[in-house]
Length: 342
Image (cartoon, rainbow, N blue to C red):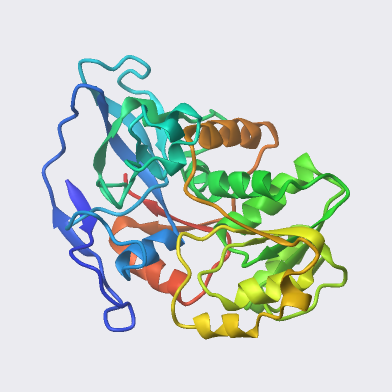
């Protein structure tokens, strides 16, 4: 089968084509696994974090990709939820132990044995992959394969982030960064909390214009001051500057939710600009998002089908994965990037 592999971590400034196109054997499903023939796979900023070593893979080479849609073509002997021909989706959570206190409390995202699709096990930048059956999801019929792919991470992690804001209708929300996840959160809010005022902070003028097209009340640069103090802000960027800028725009008792798997070292000195009175006093909170649980994905897919949420998509062939990643690195984003596999 064709696959794009990451042979090692590296800087994309030094090598703008980090993935290699290779032929690999089609994997054989284990007892509790299914083999999926992949049709589409979303491209996520987390792939950049894997490539550049901020969240390094546990094995090399590895096939990236964790927003996967395809059809079951073979079942392991102990599977039964899905049959051959069923369409399924696969997200960031590849497996967890299922027995630790975190798993028993429904917090499998915090499991010490958490394995991530495309980082700790081969993912969706390939023609086939295997997945434990309990970590695959039925895709609602309303979505095409292309539309469904971004929902499995960008949408699901956005859904979890929104839950963690504790936002209520009629309040105000900031979105720092406006890529795949941010634009889906805005679409979600229009249905779930139509009275929420959304303020978007983005470095790209095109992203700011896109946010206004989708119904944001206001948009401005990363360092701009919002027209009102905000109840909550979701930050999806990989830098520290946005944390400090967001805190100054929070009202008292407000919460900043950081939806990023890592923050880069390049601007951590910006934290020296934190002023306790301006940025942290009056019970402001910072909450990080760690992965997703299976219920986040299944609940979001149901919500997205009811709205329905149809993501904006840029399409690439599997062989163009490096191009999609280069554009993501450069901030050339409008909606979600998706690879067409078959």
